[in-house]
Length: 397
Image: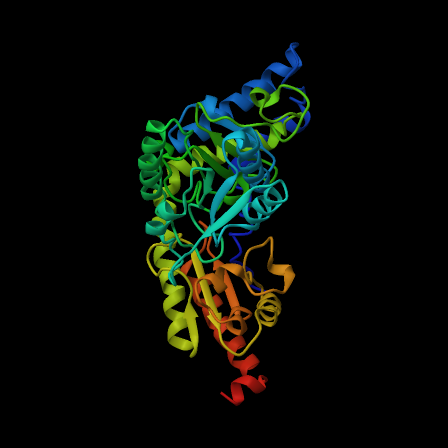
């Protein structure tokens, strides 16, 4: 049976070149990088090289790169670490309404600690209403978190424009001797996929994960700009400059570094290949399936993202039938797809609840081919037709 993997938003396959550099750190170079003796020196060197490779990908300094275990931990560390460290001067947080659940659940837990949270709305295209942000900021506002790109619908947000707004706000606050608002972006869906320059973006903190760009699971990064006050979430040793205690996952970190290096050098070529195939898949689906909509902005989106909602049938049924013919896809974010609830992202952009349940996310990878896209679109069209033939809702439409 032909197999086509179109669930790269959940996890990308490990690049064999990445695996090669990881191998020695599983068996041969097994020492603890925090030790003084020679067994720790090569693992430590491997980690520091990876820190430099990630820094190059983001156009920043290695000193600002802190390793975590995954994107969710990085998001938790950013939100809770900064808010707890600065709570004496304010307890108000602003996030967009389409954030990943690791952000939304983090701020929800902060509400239990006496913080208040305001959600910034998005338009029907999934782009935040940045002009409304300044109205939401109060003297008590301490933290703003807006994702760089959405995991589900692929929309790329105007982060540098938001940073410009906050820079203006912070300049005015400085005159009144009020501490600045810190700005975090969840870039897990974007880092290693599209170009990121943290200096140009103007953010104070940025989260990213290795598994989004052909690196291993178990390695992620929180970029923390110099001068940001942040408390550690994990107490213990002095690893990661005292920001994140615990023995590091050296093989995964080394792999993340290599994946970052490859992403930096190959990104333009990968996207030049993926974007036309993404557009082809959208074209074939919209042309051959009636009563289907593309979710998110048609152009301002990740190069491999195709998110559609099909009326009158359930996403779970489509997923199972696709799997039967060898096609892996998703009904939304990997962290929420088992919940059988309407996507908060799709609801936020105005998709009716009953239509949300018929959503499908096809996320392309760097090795996808035109033949595979045509096969997937053809099979998807057949499946939708068969499921609708069994749907009383479609028959009565």
